Image (cartoon, rainbow, N blue to C red):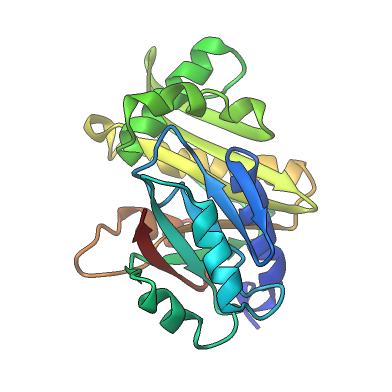
Length: 258
């Protein structure tokens, strides 16, 4: 059995949800959790409905209540995992005008297996205001978020996440975060400024976060990126696989706009 096959997928879903909830405005509806980042209303990656049909089979009333909680002027995803029930849930979403978006592949790795990463960049854990500002700018640029999102991103290291930046000399060029709870760790918010890609920033940041997860006593590390598609970039996917992560499965994202 592979490491990924032995992972508790319910636990994997929970750590990802908990990590996102820590940095979002979370609204609990009877059948789901609605996650909102008002500073970036156009980002379906950050504004989404999670957990629908996972704890119990969803009803059409659950769907309507979750959609109503999203608010107005928001582009969002509804995440449908392999555990989501009932099977006709996707038909209900289509009937309400949602369309299939870019799914996310989840990955798992044992943090205790070492990862070699070679780079000339220097890594530093974010511990002060200048570090938080650098982290926020890189994350915003990497994910194409509006400038209004930077103050929110600067609070991420104060919300239960540990964050790092990669520096080329004195210039911060890469960033990444880790959230750990219950013996599991989630890796996210990783990005490199376009003009500094190819210098090994993300491999080094992955290695640093794996070491941190092992030191925190975690026995599994979870991360995710967009599923492989011919019309989508796959650099992040390749970096994750090259770092020894194993595929768990795809979460389908249904996109809507209010």
